[in-house]
Length: 359
Image (tube, rainbow, N blue to C red):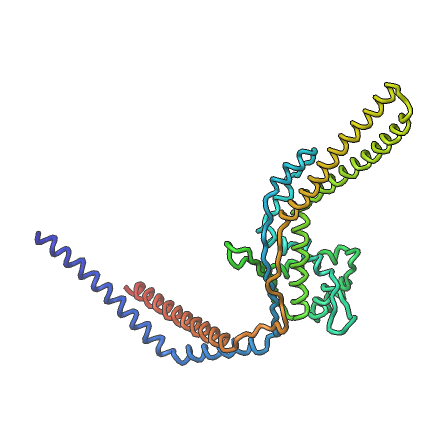
């Protein structure tokens, strides 16, 4: 029992010594850093000044924001069933384009390239320019480089290999660094589109055209199969209408010819024409009714995109110089503390190594 107590005392004593040594090291490190407080303060002030100047001399940034709501239409089951009655297939391609895919669609090359080759009006009335040219012309360095390489100007009808490659780099940069598309809340249907750049005119037009092009493409693709079947049903209605008109003319002609005859064969032919007219009339009525019903159903199924907020001038982003200075000062102070701490640690290691060599 006595041995165990002594052992426990030794253990606790060893822990106390270790904690005491640790505390002494912390105090020693603090005293060392306190001696270097002047350098730490000076480094913090220097980095703070650099942060302030960086914001002060930076090119102004402009942000265009647009918000819209996306309401999905009803399911296409009713229209699919109606189409199958007449031998039409709705297919599954349109249903594969879900609402969340609209966000990815807005950052795709196909949509962005279409937007960049749109024509916009500049500040002066009648002064129009391709959006892609506006982007390049507001960046002198890029303009000089691409002009010297024969990349600029672009042709909307045809791109050579160098232009296609350069355009791909531009679109990737816009998509990854300047454009942000997100849902305000996953439970809600609001989508926000943000673009940040150095040209307010480009920013505003780019966001507006991007939202419009992507929305049109989304709705067109989503409803493609349904509209195709509506067109097929319309052609079927037109065909039956022609057949019905021809049958009615034939029936009238037969009636006129048989007005003064009592031949059985003639009456049979007239009866056949009458039956044909009756059948086509019934079929035509059903087709017209189903066509109107289909148009009503497709209108319900079409996604509804409603603009909530659009960008308005001025679009400039006000960067806080004080915030940049404080971040720079903190970063400078932190780096200087790390430097002196590492220096002290290496010095301590050298002393321990020399002590081991002497022993």
